[in-house]
Amino acid sequence: MTKLLEWLFGVSLVGSVWALVSFDLLDLSLPQTYKDVAWPMPLYLLVSFGCYSLATVGYRVATFNDCDEAAKELQEQIKEAKEDLKRKGLKM
Amino acid sequence: MASRKTSHSKQDKSDKYSILLPTYNERENLPLIVWLLVKYFGESGYNYEIIVIDDGSPDGTLEVAEQLQKIYGEDKILLMTLHFLSKGTAYIHGMKHATGNFIIIMDADLSHHPKFIPEFIEKQKEGNYDLVSGTRYKGNGGVYGWDLRRKVISRGANFLTQVLLRPGASDLTGSFRLYKKEVLESLVERCVSKGYVFQMEMIVRARQLNYTVGEVPISFVDRVYGESKLGGNEIVSFVKGLITLFATT
Image 1 (cartoon, rainbow over the protein chains, first blue to last red):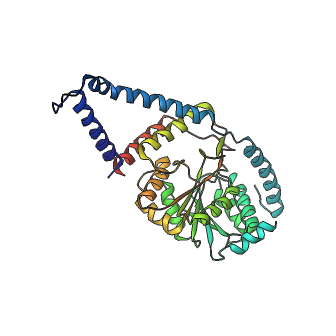
Image 2: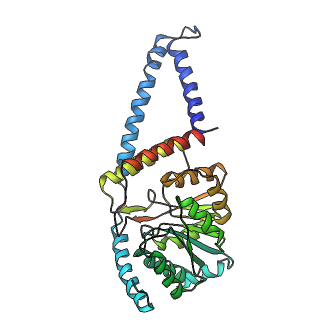
Image 3: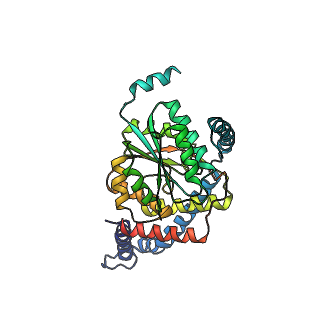
């Protein structure tokens, strides 16, 4: 199953349960509280996911390692390499 | 020093690592990357060869490569000229001439540092992984020379990719990897995308085929010479590619 199909399947499953509860489609005579909680759920989940995404990406950007030493080491090795290669006969 | 001796004795002497270096206008960087590769492979004792696949560079990359061949030997440095539209094509042709049983792919512009290759090799041996991917996003992996915009785009795109594809690897657009030769051969034939998305597709297809993926944190030093590009076009084609992978894998 492709990821798209997985998502569609998951969304339809959750969506049917939500519709069932919110609109009482099976005439289950559920208490009003169930309906009151279920009805805004999609919006809550979307907003929660949005906040989670922002927080996660923000955290990951903030903790993105800056490799200053790697850059310095590279610069030194470039110098060393150029000298060694010149000795070995490379014409750059 | 003593520990290095023991790892030598555990080494399988028949393992050989072929490094594929697709190049376009890398006259300045090629000698440096080759020097670094020779240094770290020499120190680690692993058997290797470097395959330079030049895209007909007008700046004389091939001449420099020929000089390097004289210095280091034709058994260590192989040269090819190939007009390739995508790295995938370069890999396919490079592999045809590769005599190693492992293939290492990396960029020739010094953003990928050969010092990580022995770590890739050890990681691969540790879990007999089918492929080992260098990651900038985990452990002490990281980048140098990226401004805030670049970091946000990178992390944002990676987050989106993780949510949509759940690929089981932290860095999908990276191109510093070690593959078992037969694994790379089977993957490259199946992959149809280009650019960043090609590297993503390789990992996604690898997971589909139940190949095992190991990770090693790497530092990515952005372009010592010249500047890298991440404009609107790249972003659009990335999103298109991501949606395609989402819908087809």
